[in-house]
Length: 122
View 1: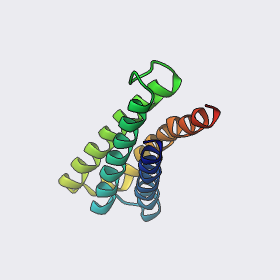
View 2 (view 1 turned 180 degrees about the vertical axis):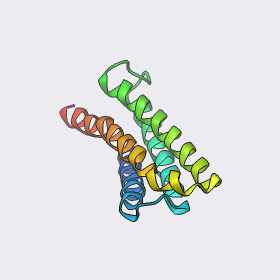
View 3 (view 1 turned 90 degrees about the horizontal axis):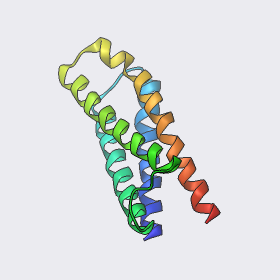
């Protein structure tokens, strides 16, 4: 199960990073970015779910648990907000959306890195 969780998390990192950084470099939010954000969220949620089953006891109220929960909530809000921005087709919002994306991506990296570190220590 660990292998499946790691694969999911690597896919989450890959898709989410592609979405966030391509949006930044293209200087506007596009429909395909939103699609990739949702795919990243699905893989992150799947990986987190598998990891919580491996951890026996589910959610742990520690640094990794709290930052991981925050990251998933932010990713969900990010994907929802991106969907709304694309739906409204507001050019001004599309052009500035990357600022929010990068902040969420950096926050998401905290539990990703801490999970990798804690996993290697065990």
